[in-house]
Amino acid sequence: MTSLFKTFYGKISLIFLGLLFLLGTVQIIISVQSSLNFVCETDQTINRDLAQNLAGEFQPFLQDTIDYAAIENIIHNLMVMNPRVEIYLTDARGNLEVFFADPEKIKLKTINTIPIKAFLQKKDKKAFPIMGDDPKTEDRKKVFSAAEIQLRPGEKGYLYIILGSELYDNAISGVGGSYILSTTAFTFGVILIFGGILGSVLFFNLTKRLRHMTHVVKEFEKGNYEQRIELSSNDEVGQLSNAFNRMAEKINLSMDELRKNDSLRRELIANISHDLRSPLASIQGYIETILMKDESMSPGQRRKFLETVLTSVTNLNLLVMELFELSKLDAMQTKPQPEPFSIAELLQDVVLKFQPQAENKQINLITKIPTKLPMVIGDIGMMDRVLSNLIDNAIRYTELNGKVVISLSENDNKVNVKVSDTGEGIPEEDLPFIFGRLFRVEKSRSKNSGGSGLGLAIVKKIIEAHNSTITVKSELNIGTTFLFTLDKYQISPVKVKV
Image (cartoon, rainbow, N blue to C red; front, side, top):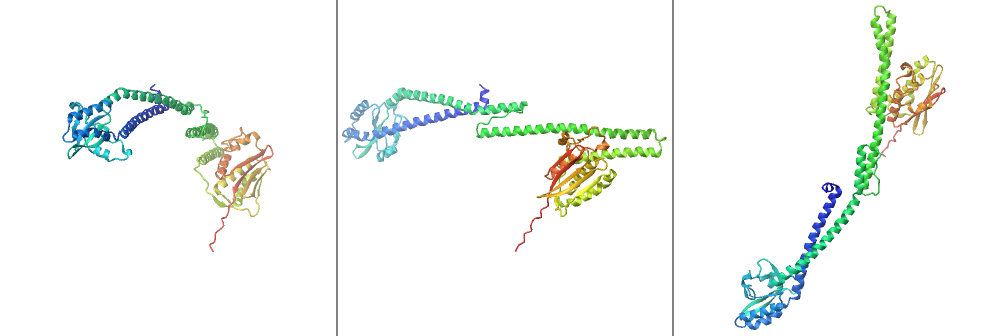
């Protein structure tokens, strides 16, 4: 039972029952008080002229002096005929003059005359009930009827009739009161039980979706990431369920991305370890040989060994630099600094840089640049790196007497850049992976023949940083073509004030 009230359903049910009990109690108090007020108002309205009608019965015994015996006898007879009333004669100041009751029961010898005067002045029954003093109690007020009467020659007084006598109160409290209270308590109990059951059922149904949501969240916490909450409405609970589902989807996507990145990281570490092991072993071997044969080694042989060591160190330095550059692009630490520039002039400068390398392999390096080609927007340094990597790759994988063609063309608001070669091509199954880190088409080729495997990954990152994409087409023994686009530089019109 204790654990039930710790739940949300138990708490709102307990609060509902408490509010129901509180509101029911307040309603009963208000109803009982309203009923009593209504009874008092009705009683006083019906008996409004009772004192006035009875005044004539007392007046003959108040001519010269007060005939106490005769008046008490009249009061006695009237109270016998109507036990609900108690009759008093007072002077103008409210002092009791005549009454028929045990003197020990009289608590007030003087009553307040203000309510009597208010009663006599009221012509509209809407002002009722007017409560007056009850001589038999010090603090209880009751409804009454009153009339002025000639108490003595030249002295006025009041005929004061309490409409609820002591006998009447005892009867009500002893018989009627218990019936009313028992009936009211029974009715309230039935309402409380029925309302409690109905409210509990309604709250159970309302919190059903919350319990289901709690179950799904706990399952998700345990690792069951495919759990989702069924949406049945668009209320606050439905919106919360929808928000959880979207959050779960994002968490799944993030976890998939983390797993993918972790796999790539392990693969990258393995590839880097492999690429570093060979040149480091070569450097170590050549240096150990130089140290061992230092006295017997000829200057030419020593120079050849040192040149081999320098080549390996240069390749290692290039690999480290490319890894550092790629990591900065991944972390978006290196961002493009766009500016307008001539892609035609940049291409010619890059081609001149690779012309000796092409001539060494007897490769024809061709550029196709249309006249009046517009300027483009981009980071000139990054575009230099992209063109250099693509042309270097094209020359590296093109056989002797081959051809490498770099062409520029205009298309709508774009400038197309295309690098084609007549090299060995790329197998179709490898095309989706060539932009990956350290990916090589020739898995068995040496470091010296194949490059670091990071060039195309850097190219892709730079192109994506320019909000563009790079595509590749290749056929074995025919050649490969890379294509990407850059935005034209649009000159904003100058507004001239007239």
